[in-house]
View 1 (cartoon, rainbow, N blue to C red):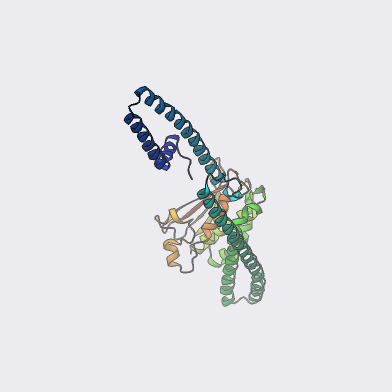
View 2: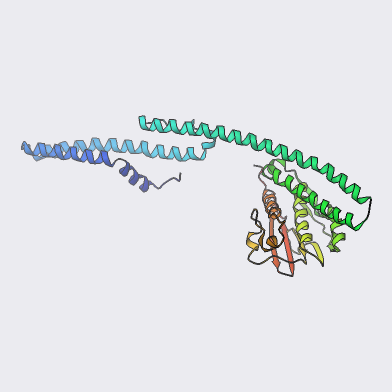
Length: 337
């Protein structure tokens, strides 16, 4: 409910009380006609009308003040509705009391429903989180078995196993993202150490696809959450490796005063019309339609995580030239929700 202007409230008050106003006008007309028929002095009639108008005006002003005050109280209550209906203004009549009872019933039903949904959601999160952690054990065992025999078939299986691990990490990130604010640990970290963690994880994929990594030195300390920033960089590296068949991936700091990390690849690029929507949940664009396994979740998670960290991400790309991802790490204004 948006608070209305004073003149708008006056107009609405008149509309709400139009029946009373019409009825009072009819009574005054009858009053005036009766006095006229009995040939009473005009001065007496005018004086009686004046007294009636004064009394009527007093009650109208008093009633309007109550009307205006209740409107303001309801506007304030709307912003605090999540805390309950205890502060709702008292009803002036039976109909208002009935409406308030209906509101309280609906509010209580809504609270009960939300409580049940929260419990079910928490149970689902717990189950899939447990599943994601448990599935890592057989994946790790599979990798060890395949590493013992260096055949070309096993190398391909290792690549697919690595992708499965990526998807499991994405599931964990997706499950935890809504509660990420309470999981934040903001400290000063060496950006180079964070980047190296991500690169180390994807070393096998760089070698497997024969992609050159150009990692430039960066003497930079950032205030961030290490775990979540590593997750973001890993997702970007995953996309870069996925859509780059030859060439190189470069990681460096932009030559500006602000702290901007750049991850640049020489991959297939992103269509210009797709760029404004790459951070939307489930959006895969032209590349995703070509790659039937694309989920459209990776960049969505990156944007959501970086928003919680008060970092910014932008993407520049040209088809068959490559993609440049920039992460602005210059400022932190994170609010723990």
